[in-house]
Image 1 (cartoon, rainbow, N blue to C red):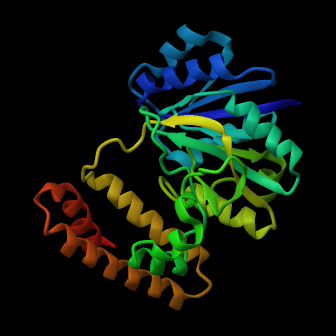
Image 2: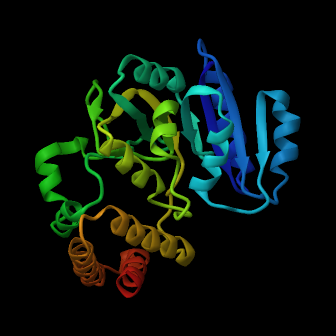
Length: 296
């Protein structure tokens, strides 16, 4: 059995995918691995470019339609031969041998089922790499107060690991998610009800319920290019809001808790609309929160 199956889901992002793959082949050493690209029916010649550039080093799995992030990863996981599975976004660039670091961490910590590294912007500024808790009624209340409760408890390690040691966290982002394959087989793969957003969070929820830990491993360092601009994109906001509701329905202990989460989110959205209405420079953020208030 090989050590790691590296899975990247692609949808018309060949310009990003080649950079991710180039960094993989440059930085990934002293470990056995396979690379699987699952393509969601792209129209940008992704298959031809990958075959020409990488040949047999990349297994290119073409799907007949865009089935979303989770379901596409499921197709890759089904054919994965590694004892660990590394889910990597195409808009990432490895800064070091992160694959080996994360895989060996799982191998050496049998109680850990998922781990991820520290994520950075292209300017090497720290960005959201994990969250110390899973979304819940607590997180909705915390966000209502500007995350003050969490910052008081976790300080500047709320979503990025500034320490030099691994931290037990709520979940790691799906941009760089190393998962023990045997645990995936036991827990089940991504829930196909999710198209985009919250699918990795829901999977983590199930795995944590089985008693496994989720860890941030700061020695693994990766650039993540997502979210460089703040603009209202209605289809993404719709997906976010739908997936958020779906996640809370599936994980809340009762309908009352789900409804409380919705009410608190609505209040939070209203507060943001009032706040950003005072700043002309924040028009895009105002548009986003107005949309969320209207559609949550």
